Image 1 (tube, rainbow, N blue to C red):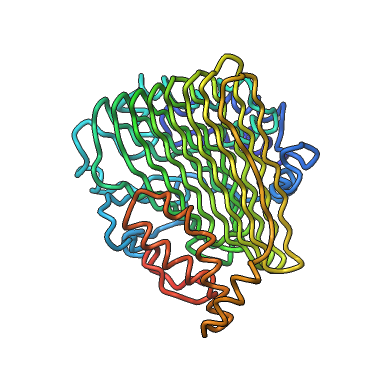
Image 2 (tube, one colour):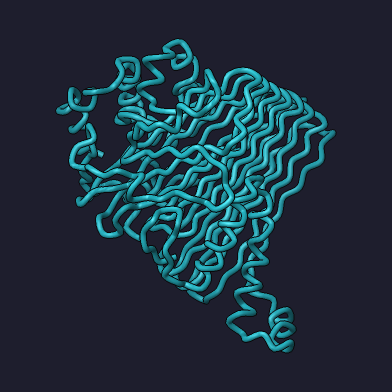
Length: 452
């Protein structure tokens, strides 16, 4: 922690360089919060399996001012998901790569750099940026420190702003690329604002350009869904064993809004995803899905908190893990139904499939209910493949390896079917099949040869 404090004090001008003054104005207060709270530690109840403070104690080099990276992502990463009609954008080491795709969006829609948004829409920026992070009185101190760290050091990011009653027909596809020849720490930021009646679909692909350098990424995502707004947000992680990924996702939903979030980890090193959702308007609806496929010594930890703050809201939460070798998975989910929030519907499920004696899964589904007229349930199952089903498939002439693959694929299918981007569903089925087979393929999502 000390190296980051010293870096901020000694290189403040370099951190501010090239950034909007409005973005820079948030740093000082965030840095004070970080100094006071620090990184999450394993002693915290919610961080028992991912030790963030230990992960970041190494003296990572900061990536500042776009230095040292000269790649054209359009040439290196050919992000073509078959049958997915999309607008394609790139973020390289936390910086938005300016391109022509944003010009093809509907008028008044902003899709681009965080700094550019601060310059062009200063009032909107001040209204939304860092508001879910800074205003969360219930946010644990350890999470406040991690998000404050990101706010203090971030230099750019991505913003999607969709004005009132505007519908973006095509999916927006954003590819996050971590690139460089040296060990580095990258801070990323995303802000999604959908005003009343707005609709959008967003796919974010997370890739490592080179598997060798050790990279740590912190990421903060703030999502605002206005009244009757609809957002589909799918995030796909395909990084490397040398990647650390620490994300905090914050969502605020107004009345009758619908937000559908799907987080899928196909390959990684160590990943921690936090999701905090506030349902603040009646008849708001949240669908939160997650899936992780991990082997070797990969670690994947998902933490969720859904706050029902008004009556007549609904949430549906499903997380699935498929672990093998010495992989470690963790899930901690909490749904809070506040006092007076009658007619709430809240469902939470965590299901896990273990393929070896050495992998480990830790699960903690939780419900806190302070209202009496509600429909709520939560549950968890952890086990191995159904031996009877496996025997049945083999008895019909299917080789055992193929039978195992079919059962794993069937286990993951309901998460994939929850995605409403049809072309992406088809692509994910292929990627998951290849991942189960452990094959080397040329992934058309990134244009490079990756072990899936």
